[in-house]
Image 1: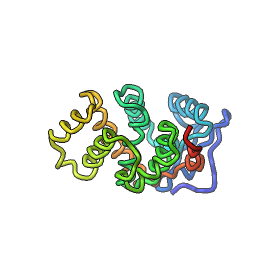
Image 2 (image 1 turned 135 degrees about the vertical axis):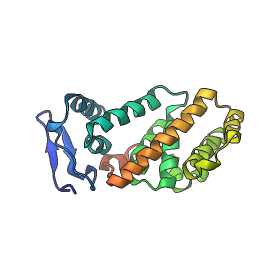
Image 3 (image 1 turned 180 degrees about the vertical axis):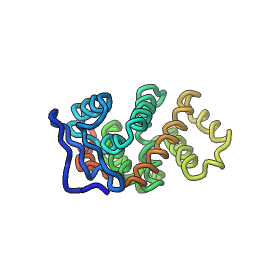
Length: 207
């Protein structure tokens, strides 16, 4: 268990919060391989803080590289709108009860959708979310793949096609769902804790 009262600080000013996860130790930033230090520094500069998922996955550098390479592919090379990606993440994380992803990706869903209420709806019960019929089909399939994967059939693919999603977008819906089921389970097993900053991000009124 990590000491939850301290952070590790590098000469570049990067801090890895020892409370980023509670079931495994958070490494010292100064001890990380150069490529991890560079990636974490870039994310810290972009976000204004170091998201705790970076601190946590740094525990095992080879897994950090693989995890974030696939994450980046999912969000950078997708036929989905970015808010759709985040909607899937939050709906999946909601049914999985993943505290870290509910809070962190809830913030991203609010920001990309420009909707301060959407994430709360998705976490509590995605069926209550104020989304289009097309996007509700997307969420229905993502949640089905999460809760009852053995029951997913070609009929679900046809539902997505009929809703207007392209073949590539349908692949991406499944890929995002599958990846964040993995992410949820690791976050829950390691007891990753969301940064305080995530709780208030994107809660401004709709523009």
